Amino acid sequence: MISITYAENTIELHLLASIFISICSLAAFGYLVNDLSDITSDMKSNKTNLIGQISLVPRLILPFAFLLLSFLPLIWNLYNVVTIIILLSNFILASNYSLKPFRLKEKGLVGVLADALGVHTLPVIFIISVFYDSYFISYQESIVISILILWAIITGIRGILLHQILDIKNDKLSDTKTFATNVGIIATKKIISKYIYPAELVVFLILLIFLFDTTPQAGVLFIIYFLYEILNYAIVHKEQINPLHVKNNYILLHFFYEVWMPLIFLISLVFADTIFLYLLGVHIILFYPELKRQFENFLQNLKEITKLLARKIKFS
Image (cartoon, rainbow, N blue to C red):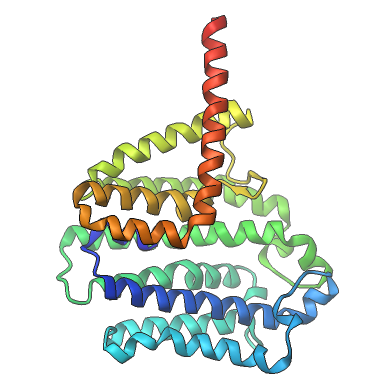
């Protein structure tokens, strides 16, 4: 989410730090509340529940601690009223998604939309509201923001539907009624592959076209990455690109959004101004284990692709 903003704005360190505190606290709050509400159902399906393994007092204190921590930047008056309302709305939605009496996660399509809104869309809107607080939004920027929000909604829907597919066995054992358990795996997979995934790709490509105006260096890096991914599927996996492909913790687009996309935008910013080297360094330090693992996989796959291409050229 922040990676898109990398491409659109001059980064101010204190704003980035405040966003990091609020977003991480929000994510921790949502995770804890969800696990707290699922203790009984997880016991039925023998699913590991970390918060269920600690005593009652920390269970209750931790979510409230992260709730308070997320609003810490208010001390430095970094958030306006709109930003505060967006952040507070995200916490309310995260609570109602997991906790009774609403427990939106078991409300079928409403649960899917609630997760997409809470996990992807509202955090994107929150980040935009922080960075654009003191900036005039031009017509082109408003278009980019609208496309970004649409992309966040679609990506969020795909993410939660795929999660429900992967977790459907546990949900059935615990009698948790999700969209996927209601309509079935086959129908859910069809919705993803036929409607959600194509829409996500189209909207994301449109978003990139607009962003290329401000970060043309990223365009070259994205083209290289997509060519690699196509060859990776065709040669290493020996199959067509599949949005439902899950193997060795690899999920199509998942690591692209979380690892490669922010890295590409950060590298392109460094090309534009070396002052952003500090931000690239911070990013690498914070996400080093995952970056290392993904880079090793990238080199291994690239080696395999090169070897197989050389073999085909030799025998052609």
